[in-house]
Image (cartoon, rainbow, N blue to C red; front, side):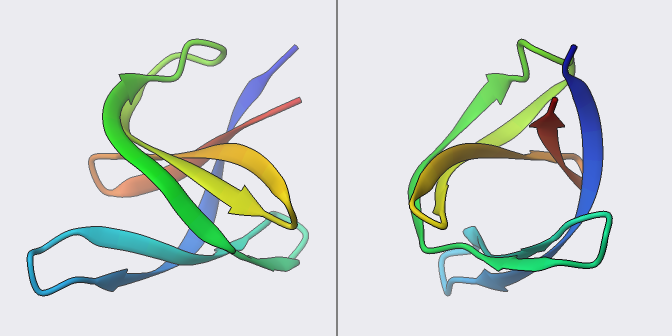
Length: 78
């Protein structure tokens, strides 16, 4: 079963106002660098509920979704 896990994110702001995640800090304190942001769009988190901006990111060579829901970041975790 999947669950919503809130994470700490370090982000940069472009001159146009776009928020770009740089790192994600997991619950155990491990920090993962976002290799690349592939897509940003408004979407629902279908597996755990909620919606907001969905960032399709590549982290450690794996594609994953990172969500910005108002002012909190979360991921869909198993």
